[in-house]
Length: 233
Image (cartoon, rainbow, N blue to C red):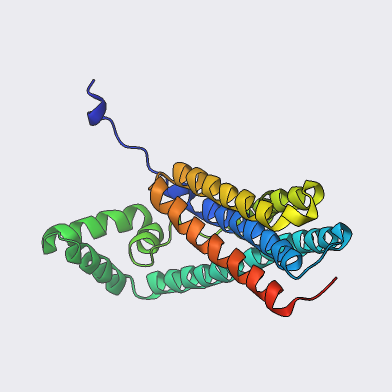
């Protein structure tokens, strides 16, 4: 069989947890590195103080990311559930109008009026609610929000991403810490962009460039703030 005739693999089913995981890992790497770089650039020479700030930032950041994802995605879920209930009510009270709306949707997508109406009737007979959720509201099993999944993925990814700068603050000599944090963070961000693009089946070059640019800006801004204020720990 010709390989080109085989169906291509799609990755949209990974979008919910992958988005949360990439956000968490990216935030963990950049936030903790920026925190450590800012303190080091301010003139801090005590590893204990830098390490304490890094650990506190790692714990607080992971909990914040998980809680933020859960709350925000739960809000999306609440909206979806409310719309589902409204759609159920409309199907019970005005089925003809809903059938006409579904037929209009299919007609707008390119079907002939008679064909669109026939498709709408057949789908309504099979699963009226599912057809309207999918085609009228855009809600399906793939895109439907999952708060707990997003929270766990984001929090765990933040911890994983934040471990790298934590290890650097533990092992690197203080005079070299800012440089070590910068280069290790850039390497980690490039790896994150590569992995996320691979898992999502998207452009690796674009993902790596995007994450590298924003990471550099974040670290540069943190170092600038530390040097401007010059706080001695």
